[in-house]
Structures are given as structure tokens and as C-alpha cells.
Amino acid sequence: MRARMALMGKDYEHREVDLKNRPQAIYDVSPKGTVPVLVLDHGQILDESLEILHWAHPETARAEFKIWTARCDTEFKHHLDRYKYATRFEGVNAEDHRNLACAFLYDLNQSLESPPDFFKSHYVQFQMALGPFVRQFALADRAWFDAQRWNSVHAWLEEFLQSSLFQGVMKKYPVWVEKS
Ligand SMILES: N[C@@H](CCC(=O)N[C@@H](CS)C(=O)NCC(=O)O)C(=O)O
Image (tube, rainbow, N blue to C red; front, side, top):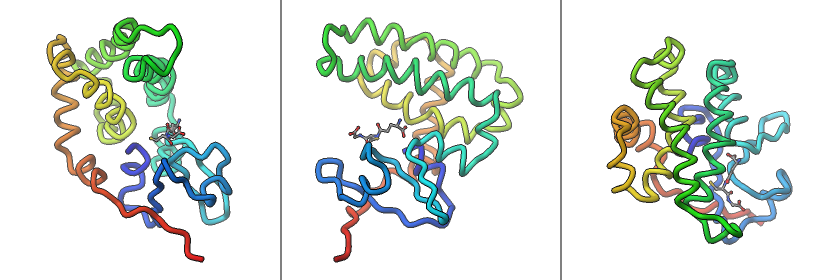
């Protein structure tokens, strides 16, 4: 979702991959076989959504922005995965990780309450970068999420979910089939 939003309005060929039946072509360009993968004209491969965001919106590589994306992709994502998919990890308690993930959301809430200038001037880029992960966290238990006192995060997420940015990438794409 992050990469799709980052690439909105760019001229590129979208190849939808069925993760249960991945084509050889994805492994040929990126052996880890995860999406997203962006192949640039001169053959350079970007196979992390953050790299794709940086490529499409270079201002997101600046330090003021990276503080958030680094924290989202390491600390928050780590706890989000263990909260959502606790059974896939040995000895993991979902609630512990839900609580640990809250530190990020608490800080995000504070920043949204009195946003630094960079946050205000790059609002849409922040939505692309962080929105999909906050959405996943919220959807894991929406009633619990809604009961927390993060009013600014709630409003921010709702605005993101209603945005043409997010709505524009939520459509279903036909799975890409390699022409023989
Ligand atoms: N760090 C990666 C994570 C990518 C990722 O987890 N992609 C998922 C789909 S959204 C995937 O390909 N899952 C299949 C797998 O991990 O084998 C990024 O943000 O680009």
C-alpha cells in the first residue's frame, strides 16, 4: 500500500503478484520474493517499500522524516506483527506487543497535536509512509483501538482512510501473468 501510494501519478507498469503463487519473474529480480519490488529503467532494483518511497519522494529521506519511518519500520512493525500474528512466533503474547506498540502511537498522537513544521508541510507523505501500518494496527482490534485516548491519531487515521490517496490504491488489480 505504501509503495502503491508513493507511485501514484508516476508512469510505471503495475504487475500484481499473487503471494500464494509467485511468478519466477519476481525471484529473478529480488530473491526474497516479497512485494513491493520496483525495477527502474536502468535495471536498479528497489525491493523495500521505504526505498520506493524515497525514490518517488526524495524529501522523505530527510532526517526529520526518517525519524518516523525508521521507528515505524523497526519498533512499531516488530510489535505490530507480534500483536497481529502472535501464534506465528514462539512464546509471544499478543497483548504485551500491543502495549509495546503503543509507545509509537502515543508519540505520533503528540506530534499530531502540535505538529512540527516539517510534519505539516509533508502531511501527505507522512500519510503514505505511516498510514498503512497504523491502519493494520487499528484493524487488529478496532473496538480496542477506538477506546484508546489518542484522539489525534483516530482523526488522522480516519482522514487517511477517507482520502483519495488511500482509496485510489485499494482497488483490486488483475494478477500479472507472464507472457510466454
Ligand atoms: N520490508 C518490506 C515488507 C514487505 C512485506 O512484508 N510484504 C508482504 C506483502 S505486504 C509480502 O510480500 N509478504 C510475503 C512474504 O513475506 O513472503 C517492505 O516494506 O517493503
